[in-house]
Image (cartoon, rainbow, N blue to C red; front, side, top):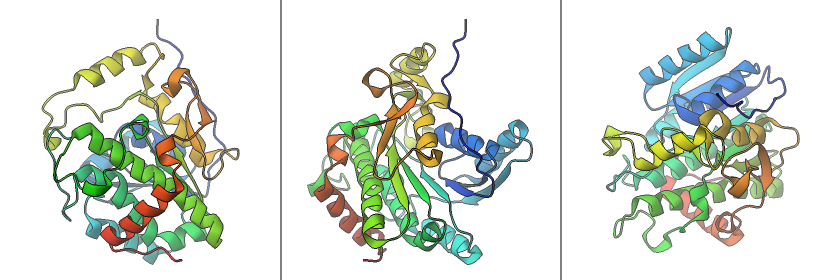
Length: 313
């Protein structure tokens, strides 16, 4: 007998502009749909515009009247990041919600971005960092809630400071962990800097626990010809809601962090169940690796240098 999926209720988001990266699939698709159903105007920045348009049509079929805009964004190309930011700055509409959700996971062999950075670092962290820097005036104007999607992998391994681009000893999972630690440090540091500088932005971090998304599924363009054993096992466990959950449940911590009046800046949200792998969203103690203020300041400086962007002092 099918189980009842866990869910939360979110407040009316009418009139708000929400930007959700990676909204053509997985958690991002679900987040875009939930925000649209709550009345938000949702921007869906995606790498594949045809896939994004198809995703938007699926949402409109489920949410009549959904206000969706598909935009081109390749987070692994800083020129693409800048192009979208420039479009949005020219339009001038304040951003109320930004969910840094898009990501790639564990290409079997090392791959580089258009700018020569390791692909996971470029996509999962550096592109999001650069986009936030470029659209900071819109985030400030909207007194935005910024929620960054982390991972349980951010509680493993660490940042390879001496080989940040993994040129010498690439390892798929360690590199993935490093990228998710980096973007999580950014998410928490953004809140610190907002409070220190009066930007009016609230920034927090969420993770989906262990969720049955497509990150570990077949991705020929990533060098993965078939689904991994891990994703097949996660899909099986998600049927029971213990130790793993569906994508619809996995998106709830980020949805809560981005919309709840009770969610706060600098906080870390994830599933409330056993080992924080499944369950309803709740605040939890940040992983040690993402609570390090010195590491956050260091990755911030390094990211500004690599991306060629500068947040105001």
